Structure formats: structure tokens, C-alpha cells
Amino acid sequence: MATLSHISPCATLYQNEHVEIVERKGIGHPDTICDALAEELSRALCRYYLDNFGLILHHNVDKALLWGGLSEPQFGGGKMVAPIEIFLAGRATGEYQGVRIPLEELVRQSCTDWLQSNFHALDPANDIKLHCMIRPGSSDLVELYLRQQKSGLALANDTSCGVGYAPLSELERIVLLVESTLNATETKAAHPEIGEDIKVMAVRNGENIELTVACAFVDRYIDDADDYADKKSQLVRQIEQTASSLSNRAIKAAVNTADDVNAGSLYLTVTGTSAEAGDDGQVGRGNRVNGLITPCRPMNMEAAAGKNPVTHVGKLYNIVARQIAFALVQQIDEVSEAYCYLVSRIGAPVNKPGLVDIRVALRNNDNLEALRTPIDTIVNDKLNNMDQIQADIVGGTLLVY
Image (cartoon, rainbow, N blue to C red; front, side):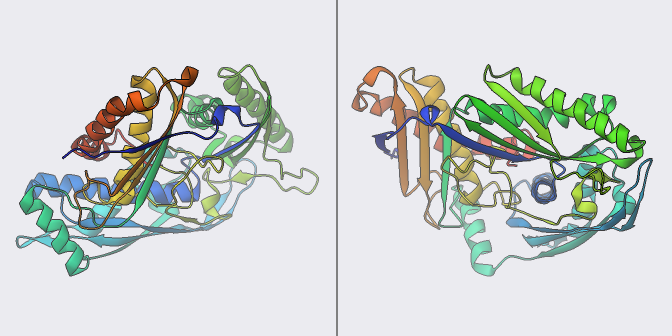
């Protein structure tokens, strides 16, 4: 039986709001590191389970804590004094059909591979200390998980909700572009002084956009305070140029606004991340599944990273709600904005939410009721396509941070 949606018009158009706030914590931010490593571990578990047993076994490794290290940065190159310690915790099947799963090896390999691929000034072997804290899941949740394997029907392992919206606003696209540009491989090759820990806070007030960017500069590529100031000025210009490629609004950028040159207080690091001394991190404290923190939009506080992609609706529903919203905007000409809210019930099929609430803004006062059939069709198509979401997550083409 098809799922029927509750459909209503949007009370206001987001694009008409006078003030907008958008944030992104870049890949080198301690919170994003935790999200990424938890997700990489889940993907590694999925691949191991599939390769050895033909199915994804029960796991949720969505608890990670980064305990910042100690460092002594200085112009021309400083040193790490104490390593960054990362604790990967959660539940996973450690034995199946008499076969032991090498959980600790999977933790170390998946984390080391990601860190090596995403940092150019950090040495995982010496700068990072990993802790594997994975234990088996509770018997009731494991049984529920195996029950769906026998029936061929994925059953929700939690009572949770998910939310998604579309399209992205101009400011949201700017924030994503600025961070991805600064953390691009070609940018690091041309400007190795730019570390991976980049946080972008954007505010639009009417037709004016202000971007406040925190960037961890890498000390070995900076000669002195004058060189730091020069490279920071270059970065400001690059940010404004990048943002202007998406907007005709007035754009002003500022970088590392807490710097005090006279006091010798500058955002200088050995590794390119504040995790080396200035900050700690945790899963779920940063970006939502669309890669953004959007206080002016509906958001779900679920920590999606590290949750299994088969039954954990805290992960799946935030992804599919976003996909539904985008499909509504892209496939129905009359829809200019869309919001999707999903609520699950533990033990129920994941493709049968207890509630589907769709809110849309229409062009030219179109008849909403006339769009019920195409809206319901899109909703059901996406809900019944969870296998593709699972494949995209395991394959690494769908990220949740």
C-alpha cells in the first residue's frame, strides 16, 4: 500500500526572508573529523560484512570523541607536543557464523586512510592516537535487525524523525562553494599555508552578505608576521572572488578576526587543524546531512554519521527527506520550494513512515490539490528506493557531513 502524504502550502517563502544565517564546519574541523571517521568506519564495516557474509550486519558506530592534543606552532615550522586522541565508540557485530570480525583493524585502517587522504600537513602515524571502543549491540536490537534480514524487509530500529528542504538558497550554495574551494587539492598545491580546518559563517542582511572565515594556517609555510598578514589578505580576496561567482550582492569577507599581531596572537597551527591544541570534537555537533548548519531552516539534531544505512531511520530519513524535497522542486514545475518531514516508528518498515508531511510553495497560486498525485508518486518512489541510498553511502558517493 502506498504511503499518503499530508500536504500543505508554505506559510512564507524562505527566499523572501530579510535575514539569513548559514554555517559550515570544514573537513578539518574537530567535529567534522569525528563525523567523517565515524562514517568511514561504518562504511568499512559495511564493505567487510558484504564481502564476507553477503549482507550488512548490525552496527551503529556513531559515537566519536576527539580529545585535542598539544602543540607549539611557530613561523617556519613548530612541533606537536602531545598527539590528538580520537575515541571511536559504538556497537557492531564482532562475530558472525563463527567468524571473528577484525573491528580494531577496521577502525585503524579506515581512520588512517581518511586522515591521509584529507590532510596535507598532518601525520596520522605520529600526530594521532586512535582508540577502538566498539562492543556488541543489545540482544533486542540485534534480533530486530536479523529479523528484517530473514523477511527481506528493513525494519526501523528507532522512533525518529527526518527533515529536508529544497532548493538551497544562494547563501547556502556560497558557503558550500567557499569551503570546498579552499579545501580543494589544487588550492592546497598553490597555497599549502591554508589548513583544512576552515569554518565559514555567513550572514545575509537584505542585499549585503558578510562571510566570517576561520582558517587554521600551517606554520611551516609562513615566514613571519608580515608573511602571515599578506597570505591572510590574499585569502580574503580569494573568498570574496569565489562567493561573487554565485551572487551579485555586496559581499565582504573577514578571516581570523581574533588575530592580534601586536600581542603575537595568530591562528597558526602545525597540522592545519585546531584539534592539535585549541579545540575538541564530537559526532553530531556540526553539519547536518546537507553539509550545512542552517538555524533559519528546519533542522534535525540527529547525528547521522556512523549509523548503519539499512535500518537506522535517524540517518535514512534525513537523507530521503532531502531527496524528496529536491525531487519535488526539480520534477514539478509548479513547486518553487519544498519541505519534507518524516516520522518513523520502531519495528515498522523503513519505507512506511508513520507520518509524511509535505509543505510546498507554488508559483502563480497553482491548485495544490491538483498536485497531490505527482507529489505522492515522488514520495513513494523515494521511500521505496532505500537500497540505492544504502549503495551510495557504502560506495562513498553520498556523504552526511
